[in-house]
Image (cartoon, rainbow, N blue to C red; front, side, top):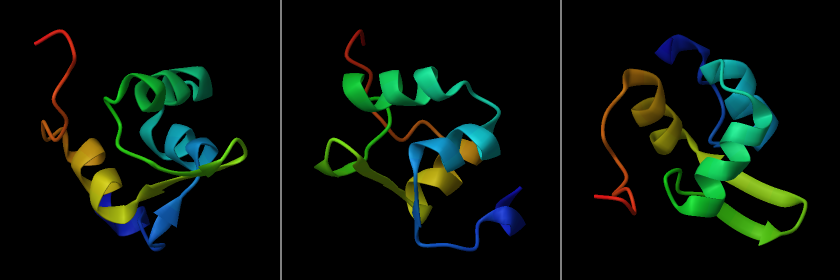
Length: 67
């Protein structure tokens, strides 16, 4: 799946499409801190390529609030 990652920044919609998660799930991950994101405003949210690579490979890259 890593060969699909050709950009440096991804939108929540692109993350949902590439990961197979529902868009609302991606927004929840961002809101709860599970998925690190760059937030530049209410409609300008980006996820880095490095974060996407970790998400796609299943690496535990974020500290969950419940742990």
